Each structure stands twice: as C-alpha cells, then as structure tokens.
Length: 514
Image 1 (cartoon, rainbow, N blue to C red):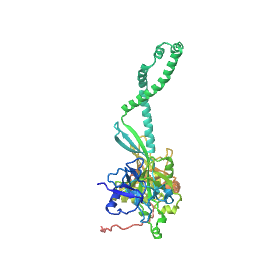
Image 2: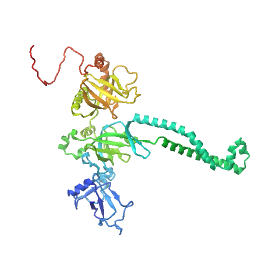
Image 3: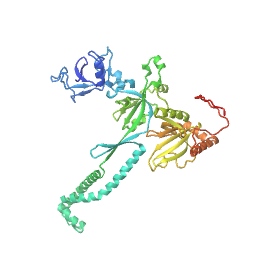
Image 4: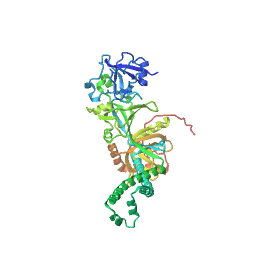
C-alpha cells in the first residue's frame, strides 16, 4: 500500500509520496501528524505546468489525486517546532540557491535522492580514466574496460586509422554505385553532354534554358552524390564492424566532510579525532576542464546535486556528473582547519614501513596503496606484457614493483632511454601486496591509479639523488643488484664489521654440548 503525506504551508495543501527511508521514519512515528519538515528539491508529479489550488478540479483530500509532491530523505529534514511555515527567507539560504547544507557525510542517505549541498575536502585525486563500452548491433554491451588517458588516445588513433582505411576501401565502390543510381534522374541534355565525345563543345551548342538546366543539375548532383556516398560508406562500415565503441571520462576522488568548527563545541573541537572521519569515494563523470581545475588535493569545495549509492561492502559511494555544481567556499578555510577535517598531505612512505606493511598484508590477504620515493636499480622483463622494477633506498630494503603493459612497450616505468645506473623516482598510489618470502622483499603493483611524479616529493627525491651519487650509495646499489643477480635474499645488507640491532626475543632454544 502506498503511503502518502498531506503537507500544508498553512494556506494550501498537497499530497506527497516518500522514499523508503522516510517511510521507515513514518512507521517509527518519527514523522507524524503535526511534524514540521524542511524540504528542498521536491518534484511535482502529475502536472508539468503546476496546478491552481483553487481550481474546482483539484482536491488534495481525495485519495486518487494525481498531482503529488515527490520528496526524498536527503532533501528532507525535521524543522524546529517554532519554524514559520512557507518558503524559507532568502537571507538564510541565499548562498545555497534555495537548498540547505548537509553538514556531514554521516547524514547522507544512500539512494535517498540527490544531496542538495555539502562541503567536502578533496583528500586524494587520481588520474583521469575512461570507461570503454563495446556494443553489438543490438546495442548490448559485450565488453567493458577501464583505460588510462594514454590508452584512450591509442584506442582513438587505432579507431580513426581503421575507419579511414575502411572508408577508402568502400569509397570508390560507393561513388560508382551512387552515381549510376543518381544519374537515372538527370536531365536529357546532361546525359547527352556526358555521352558526347566533347562535353565542352556540346555545352556551347546548348540553348540558354538548356544550359541553366545543366548547371542546376550539376550543382544539385554534387550535393546529392556526396550525401549518398557518405550514407553508403556508413552502412558498409556498420556491416563490416557490427561492434560500436564508446568511452566516458571520469575522475576518482577520495573526499571527507569539511568540519565546520562553528557547529562544534569547544570540547568537541578539542577532542576531534581526524582518523574517525570517514573518507568516501567520489566518481566524477564527464568532468569539464573548469571543474577539473578546482578538484585539487587539499581543496574545500561546495558540491550540489551529488548522488549517493550503497557500495559492495556497504559503504557509501558518491557520484557526480555535468549537472553537479562545484564551487570553492566563499571564505577560504585555514590549512589547520582543513587538517582538522581529516586531510593529510601526501608524503613518501619509507621502504621500512612498506616492508612491514607487506608482511602484515601477507597474513590478512588485503592490499593497500602507498606513495613511495626510491632508487630503481634494476628493471627486468618478466613476460611480453609484464615488467618488474627493483626499488631500494638507504635502508637496504627492497620493493619489487610489477607493471602490466603492451607488448611493444620499451620503457614501461618511464625512466628514459638515456638513463644509466640507479634512477631516483617517485610513484603515487602503488598497491602493496603480500611479502615475497623467497626474495625477502615487499611486493607492489602498478595499477590504473598509479602514476609517476617527482614534483610532489621533490625534497625526498633530492635527498635520494644526493645519496645515490655518493660513494656509499653507489656501492650500496651495486650490492643490491649483485644480490638480485645472485638470487640472494634481498633484505641482507652489505657486510660491515660492527652492527647494532634492536629487536625482540621470540624463542629460546637449548643447545646440547657435543
């Protein structure tokens, strides 16, 4: 049975339908007769142009009334008991465009309609990707792939080249066939002129009216022939390649709610734990260049008309599109305020921490993303479409980084053909996986979200560059390469006479005297 509310502003009334979450509140009697609601972004159903409440044909008290107001949970909030009915004064929401501000992602209801407005901190921004769909002749999607910008450019180039070759293949045949079909309707004077041995002399012998007919037909023929040939080529292309390709660009972000300190008490602000503030994935589809320029890590943005869905693991996933309005806050927050909202600037993770995390992952079978700056001392081709790079730093510990690539990739890690010896570089969002117990080193994978950058970790890269060029660094890197070539466990450092170690006793074994 459909549940309807009858809403009134004190003057007129209107029936309303609700979503599942609001229906639950009604069943729990948290929304009942006499409750005051603040509603925005409601949709009028049953009348495109609205309805006059004084019209004799309109009666909101009738159960079968066709004119309804559709409200959802993300755009509905309880109002104060003494709130005035009717439109909210513009002085309270002029900067929100007639909506209200959702203060936290915890207040967002999945599948509860578009979020009217919310302030978010961009914690992470990942490289732009493209979702590719391959559809058959019945418009059924037969294949879906996620592509990087480079792969998208390569696919477009291949598609255009293939399209050009196929067009040239069918062009001459289509022109001959279309010209023959079109010329059947040509004027007799034009047919005789073409059939004559000398069309120029034949044309000069024509009368004025005949010349006008010939000239008019030749202009018309050019336009018609071009259109017919183009359509014939397109039809041939469809028959030759029934699968159609389309791609949509998107950017993946990790965002957190921006904490408005004015809404917190002094005690709450002092005890605010940023680790407890959840981060949420935001997928921004078909983002414009103007909006993309605003999506920077550490920026605080007000976004309107986001949608929220429930993810595979019961987490909230946000979605944005061309209809989403994005703008910076009117008053720029301080950096300290942004940090209190849970934002953490990217810093490189040491190989010591990565090796420890890789061992922990080995037991939990999870994966995590890290930013790393290190020296690449050796690159190996594992297979035709997979390569491996060995990374190290002053600790002597090693990270094996795998990357899948095309068969013809010459420089999969973008090190440069002229580079010799250790290369200092930084990678963002490397996915760390299980520890390699045979080579005794951490293992990482280059995913679609991984990218190479030295700009964001310039200081650490400069430190590593100085160390790499030092006599100690050169010898250290050579020792790591020798251990790799000799298949010796990589965590063993070069031998030195004295070593101080700090650790825990795990087991004691009693040795018998021989």
